[in-house]
Image (cartoon, one colour):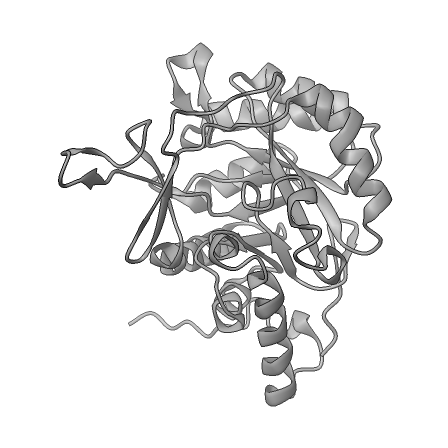
Length: 307
């Protein structure tokens, strides 16, 4: 099966990427897995200034996945520009890199994009619009059409590189939010980000996370992620990167059949850094067994008939 595709002007050797926040800047996994075997990776969110993140504990498991509140801990814009991206440019030959961008204001998003625009070592930006807008009372960019439009519009003016918008799932109509992103100049979408969640330690009766609430990821959100991709595919023509709950090649197929061209492996990498490689191998086995000549034959091939 041919696994390669050209998406928003970028050639990906296969559809399996590592999700932002689960692979650091690539260096953290370099001696554990062959990064260049994958389609690519999305580095952890970059903010204008370095961030220490939220108080510990930041991660907790539950039966169907994980809840986390990292707080966008990262090295900051200057370090990513001077050190992290040059390392990736020198290290990788085939895997593509996306830079996840986060900000407290629409202007901060645009500043980060503009500052990194001329740096080598990456193929596209991924906008993390699940951040709160401090100028609008903490409203989440990705949950309001006006705020989402403002971020995408400003970033579109700041770069000619591909812009991929990672949408928040906790909205009434994610297809409409996808339409807003497309209208303002997005080149692709990532669906989905984590769901808001809360768990208590029943002995202390306090939240299991130091920050209280957090984002839910892992197998529990697989059907919601596939549904979001299907909803967005009905509304927009943009390439979609599916993420959420993928552990196996068959999980990845769910997203491809719903309309995603690429997929990202996230939480599964915490339990097994080689999870993305296993997902890729599973896709290859499926292609051989099913006689699929090209992975593009699977994109949007799910048959859906309303009951």
